[in-house]
Figure (cartoon, one colour):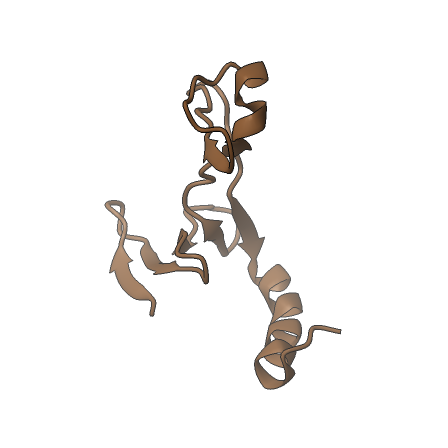
Length: 105
């Protein structure tokens, strides 16, 4: 289910979760030169294998599985696509085929 709202700047935004429960959104962009949207995962939630934690400077008692990996605030991760109307229009037939058939070929 997509929960529709407005950003604090008045732009339409829809919040939802993907199959794995990750927070995602679709939002009208503030781009002034053409219509666009932001679409994707809200937070990258970076993780590393516990077996690699020590060599990456992560202190943990875990020995197996994925553990959170703190990204420095000075690092930017792109988690959302910035799409124009034309780009979305190119995607619609592919998405509709997936809705209809479960395939994207």
